[in-house]
Image (cartoon, rainbow over all chains, first blue to last red):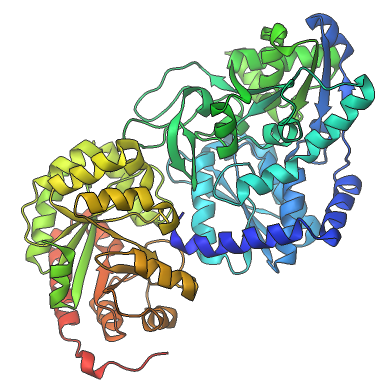
Length: 378
Length: 261
């Protein structure tokens, strides 16, 4: 991280550390999660999917969170931190637009000026989300540099923050980037796993054999995995974007699988697994799901993969589309294309799930209909 | 030449260019011209795909250079081929160093006659392994102090840096700015002069360069404006600018330096 950002990051880490022990803060956040975001989300026993797979499968319904994805858990937490730090403006990066929308929601609700950096390529792919953000008063700033996708939006947000930190909070959307973001985002998202743990104990009287979540940067995966990290009997399966396959060229990888295909490197202030060329230039990632289209991954996930605590797996575009269709047909739930990677993996390798599994449905798929229609027409 | 030798004859003019823009061969020639025009140290940027500390001018140069075939191997070949009698300083992002291996990178720097390294995204807390490699190969590792760096941290950075300390004239990223801010002057004033202080970020005119020297800096660093002239192919104007800047800082009579607070 550039020296200019060290002090803002230190101040943020200190404020977060303090507030996470502050009863008033946690009470306000809990209230917003319950009455504004709509938590707790159900842990739904997917009867038809279970029958098809020959084992019990529960779905953690983050698609039902206000805004349509788990992203609001984090933006609410960070916005409340920012408010107590006296910040008046929020900036964020977004790929698919879900994090941008979740930031626009808290910006409108809590009275921040909000600007969202979004790659030109992604703006074209996700026009509806751009309009949703604008409706809620956020300004979407097109990023024209580099590959004009998520990683460049992060670069641009960091550059903004390097001169605006006095009044601005950078609301990073995933469990990656410099400290304190990976731990702060993980903590705010851990509400997913805390609920799921209680809910499965209530429903089944025991822990699941496996939990399956998709991984881009890793916020929904860390959110549901964290409360189960010490339960060694629970397999934690992290499904990355296999994209078009394992190929790569000088500038691009055909996937977004940093855990599966990446090497150690430093990106956005963290030592983690990244998709890069032999010289250390960051490759452009690829996935049909814009939210998994990131050439890095949260540092804690990279660590947990290295120690063997989580199992990194891949699902390619085709597997994700199969998951998308089947969950819609079987359960009447249209998952986000990101979450469809986890569903598709479960359909492909049901024996890896054990007898009792939870799949994290991190978001809903309405935003992806155009993408899926285009894919199927090819 | 060692950086410390160059600082025996201050004030200094430090010029940054992006290696490989427009081509590796052109960079070798440009470095010679810039040295001949009066630069005292030349910073040679290794282009990175994700230069988060840089503004649009240097980002664009990095993209052009990468597209023109610049990579770390080509970089060291080009730098080794530069026959200049001023110190050459590497400037680039940590992942490029990490990917090559710290010791190999430092060794390649030394073999290419590089005197020091500036790594703008590497805070001193994370720099121990690279510093060890630099010491092994006789290289300076130069750290940055920003306007918002607190005093105790500034002290720590001054203890860690070698060669000189890079004072970031203003918050934000690299790029051309109209004025030298009062902030810059107070930054120079509050950083003790026990290590040479070079000021960069936003200096683009001879008057601005002279102003930071007058405010007490030991060197002025100029980057984006040079990169911009190279992009436009205006090499004669670049040489003229370097000459004018050198003249302007030499003309500063430091005994008449204003007291700044």
